[in-house]
Length: 539
Image (cartoon, rainbow, N blue to C red):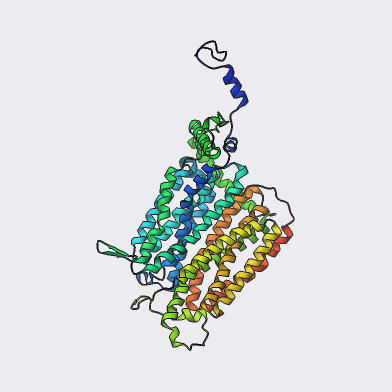
């Protein structure tokens, strides 16, 4: 370098460096994120995170499709079936609040969200692989419970992790489309069952004298998202917010430049931010104090949420969430086994009834209710493809219509009308399913319950973003998620208990819950004209 250059003093740059710092002062995390834009990097990151989110839904759904195939192995009664599908929710009920209200911020302060997801998904993958090999009902239940506890951490962290790569201007759009892709995982177990479980004669194998029937192969394939998620999370970067909190400004700046390059298809050198303003790095003592402050803050927000002027709104939303999650999860998890029973009735028993006699759903299920499940001295008939294909169609409809209604109901009044309508539709489906003339009509009515309940659940979450102030919305979302899991667990246990006693009462109970809930959204009308400050909700 020549000393003739006016910016060079023989060892360092002076004029240009000072001018550069004056034009580009240190940027905080939000400013640095805003400069990266939105594009390919965000899409790739979402695709990498999807297996983690999909794992939870597949773990909660896959049991419903193997329950009839495993009834001899596990000696399943109706109540045992309810335990099998609800145990994972019980694990999430126990672990979810700990993560949402306390552990999430404290553990993340030490490990970071990426490491939390990595540890949780790794342990869940082990549970997935272990329950493939179990032939004990109690071991299966223990592994399902452990899976529910373990997956609660990654599930509560993954969306917050992704949000740390998005500027506030993009978070609402991102949350909407990410939610659609996550909910699409409801289709996977049904589609896989339609493809695999109908191929029983040849989709099994024997290893070292150990026979693996088709339903265990099905569970093994359902474990792929957790294993794939473990691989993709290893490739995902640590969030820039975490890197800056750890004082690693160089790594954070390199990450921002990579994001800018992929999102804008421009050289990383054109990224306008050259220096980052680092937050104060907390010491161990300060971190422990922050954990106590986090717990105290969570308690304060919960008290505020369940006090005036928010008590009425959150109480109504809690009931609506509880009711619609009962309808959605009970129906979607019991449709496959119940319609398999009806298929078996058609093959074995229908011939003994007069050809012109109409048979109700409960009459078709009744012979299986009274069977000796432990004897296993019978051969199951071949299933019609429609049994699982229809489940796939129902899951697809629930995802599609749920997203469509969420886009169309853009005001509070529209959301209230949607909730009233969907609860009416759900009640009609539950009340009418037993007396439908033919099995396809029964399936359509049950589909009303599943699709309508899914729409209601999406609408409740969206209404929460409009009726509560931004500071309380994350707390409200955590409460609603907890109540939803509680409804899924309690609903499946109660349904399995009641249907073992009286099938008709179980169906009517679902209809009564939906019918009563039809009136509840009306009480929100008086609040619909009140203004709430806009903000970005966290899902």
